[in-house]
Length: 63
Image 1 (cartoon, one colour):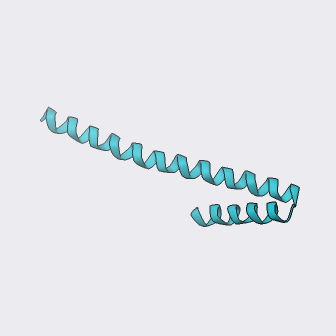
Image 2: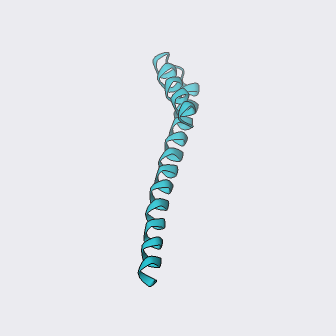
Protein backbone atom coordinates (compact mmCIF):
# COMPACT_ATOMS: atom_id res chain seq x y z
CA UNK A 1 0.00 0.00 0.00
CA UNK A 2 2.85 2.40 0.73
CA UNK A 3 4.17 2.09 -2.84
CA UNK A 4 0.78 3.07 -4.21
CA UNK A 5 0.64 6.07 -1.89
CA UNK A 6 4.14 7.09 -2.96
CA UNK A 7 3.22 6.82 -6.63
CA UNK A 8 0.07 8.87 -6.05
CA UNK A 9 2.01 11.58 -4.22
CA UNK A 10 4.69 11.75 -6.91
CA UNK A 11 1.96 11.97 -9.56
CA UNK A 12 0.26 14.72 -7.59
CA UNK A 13 3.45 16.78 -7.36
CA UNK A 14 4.32 16.20 -11.03
CA UNK A 15 0.88 17.13 -12.37
CA UNK A 16 0.76 20.16 -10.08
CA UNK A 17 4.16 21.26 -11.35
CA UNK A 18 3.16 20.77 -15.00
CA UNK A 19 -0.17 22.57 -14.37
CA UNK A 20 -2.38 19.65 -15.51
CA UNK A 21 -5.58 20.42 -13.63
CA UNK A 22 -7.73 17.33 -14.28
CA UNK A 23 -4.93 14.79 -13.81
CA UNK A 24 -3.80 16.65 -10.68
CA UNK A 25 -7.31 16.33 -9.23
CA UNK A 26 -7.38 12.55 -9.78
CA UNK A 27 -3.91 12.03 -8.32
CA UNK A 28 -4.77 14.19 -5.30
CA UNK A 29 -7.94 12.20 -4.63
CA UNK A 30 -6.12 8.87 -4.90
CA UNK A 31 -3.35 10.15 -2.63
CA UNK A 32 -5.94 11.24 -0.08
CA UNK A 33 -7.62 7.83 -0.27
CA UNK A 34 -4.28 6.07 0.32
CA UNK A 35 -3.58 8.27 3.35
CA UNK A 36 -7.02 7.59 4.82
CA UNK A 37 -6.57 3.83 4.36
CA UNK A 38 -3.10 3.97 5.96
CA UNK A 39 -4.45 5.87 8.98
CA UNK A 40 -7.40 3.47 9.29
CA UNK A 41 -5.27 0.33 9.08
CA UNK A 42 -2.72 1.74 11.54
CA UNK A 43 -5.48 2.64 13.98
CA UNK A 44 -6.97 -0.84 13.59
CA UNK A 45 -3.61 -2.47 14.36
CA UNK A 46 -3.00 -0.30 17.43
CA UNK A 47 -6.52 -0.66 18.86
CA UNK A 48 -6.53 -4.41 18.17
CA UNK A 49 -3.35 -4.95 20.19
CA UNK A 50 -4.58 -2.97 23.19
CA UNK A 51 -7.90 -4.83 23.16
CA UNK A 52 -6.13 -8.20 23.22
CA UNK A 53 -3.98 -7.12 26.17
CA UNK A 54 -7.03 -6.02 28.15
CA UNK A 55 -8.78 -9.34 27.49
CA UNK A 56 -5.76 -11.40 28.53
CA UNK A 57 -5.33 -9.35 31.72
CA UNK A 58 -8.99 -9.77 32.65
CA UNK A 59 -8.80 -13.55 32.04
CA UNK A 60 -5.71 -13.85 34.25
CA UNK A 61 -7.35 -11.91 37.08
CA UNK A 62 -10.47 -14.10 36.82
CA UNK A 63 -8.41 -17.26 37.34
